[in-house]
Image 1 (tube, rainbow, N blue to C red):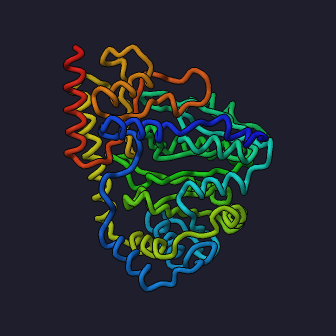
Image 2 (cartoon, rainbow, N blue to C red):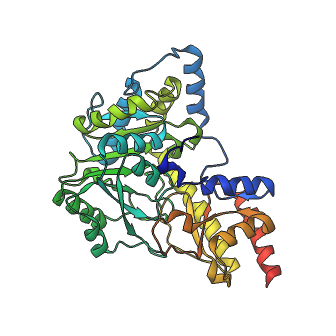
Image 3 (tube, rainbow, N blue to C red):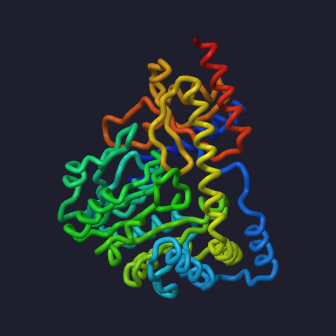
Length: 389
């Protein structure tokens, strides 16, 4: 048989699937893959059920149902002060992943360069390569995940088509500061590039940190697409409802790819998400506080065992330095060991790097689980490493 895609042939099964399968085989607590272990608000799910029963359940508009596009525009005005025309500036997709794919396919021509930060979420690189783009990596290192300005400047050139960034950032937990965003904006404007911003964890930011969208910065309105997700905001990751905000011209270019990918998304889920986005401020504050409490609970447990942890200002994820407890193997060896022997699954951090010299002394844990699950995981790890001592 002839070869299949040369691009995809270079990518194996995702590390999330590998570790989840291993967790199932060994009945381990799975803190590898990033999803909550409880479904989202009952009232949102009730709206989805009612709308599915009452219908219609035929193809909704390609751009998304009016109710959700209006809700996204109102949300972006409410939280970011953006003036958004819901009829032209909002696109609904089957998850943020599809928004990202449509953005890459709609904007990149073969040979275009794409700046992206690593460690990076696993779908970014194959999407860029499938579109014919050439990745230019900018390394962020633990424990503080700071941008090296000279490296970022060097990554941009006249060949740069876009920068793809994720804030709050999976897998690091980094929330980009205003100063960092202003640097990115300066370079995007100087080199006339687009910016695709994956902001799915926009409402999961801790402490005094605030999420600032690059779309709001001077000069970035015409060149930035902001992507968000109901999955993370409402703990409904299986629904796969994403939404993108950009100027009418930029949205239309991305929508051309969207129409040939999924075309549309289940109408009852869209209407339920529209209902959810209008929730009172207390809902969003409770989401933040709940996740921050879980981060603190699990981080404190790791530190009691002897781990040091990298900064975590948002998202579902915290990264532990495995060398801090005297483990001298690779991060993959560590994650396999604790999954099979301690009964707790994590993800090796090196999986999120693509360029050479990946850090191999960190493991990523997902803490968006019930408190009793987090406590049980800490107990298992403490018992295991206590016996090893």
